[in-house]
Amino acid sequence: MELRGRVALVTGGGRRVGRAIAKGVAERGAVLAIHYNESAKGAEELQKEIHSAGGTAEVFQADLSNTEAAKALPAQVAKRFGRLDILINSAGIITDSAEWNYSSPEFTWDPVSSRVYFFRDQSPSDLHFEEIDQATGQIASAGETPYHGDYGWTPPIRVSPDGEQVLTGGGNFFSRSGLKPWMISVVPIGRRSG
Image (cartoon, rainbow, N blue to C red; front, side):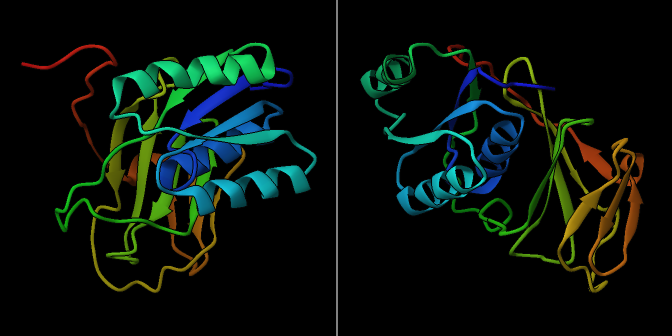
C-alpha cells in the first residue's frame, strides 16, 4: 500500500511492535510522527534511520495515560505537518507477567498479511506474530510456532513477496497458516469492557 504524502502518527513507535509498524509505514512513503513516552532513545534512533533513508520523521513525547496529553498529541502532529491522515495506536504498558514481559530486536513487517513477525527475547527459539487491523491499528490476532524448543532459530526473519512463507536465518521454514494463532480480545479506543 502506497502512503506517499500522507501523515501518519504511530503511538509507541520507539520500540517493539510499534517500531516495526512505524518503520513499515515510513518505508511506504508516509511522513511519520513517532510517539514515545519513555523510549526517547529508540524513537530518536528510528527517526535518524528514516532520515538516512530519505524519509521524513519527527518524534513526539506524550504520556498517553494522561487524558489531556492523549487529546493533545494528534493536534500537535497536525499542527507540525499541517494535517494528520493516519493514526496507528501501538502504545501500551507491558505487565510484569513473565509471559508478556518481552521485547525483541528482530522484527519483520509483512504488508500482505498485515503481520509483524518477531522473536521473543524470553524464548528466542519461538517465532511469534501479531496481526494488525489496518482500519483500526489494533492487534487483531497473535500467534506463534506450534512447538517450542531449541531449533537454532536466528535472525533474520524473511517473508516471501506473497506473504505465504516465513523463513528464519537458521533455515526454519513455515507457511503463514502453519503458525498457531490465538485470538485476543480487542477493546476499541474510547470504549470500556465490562
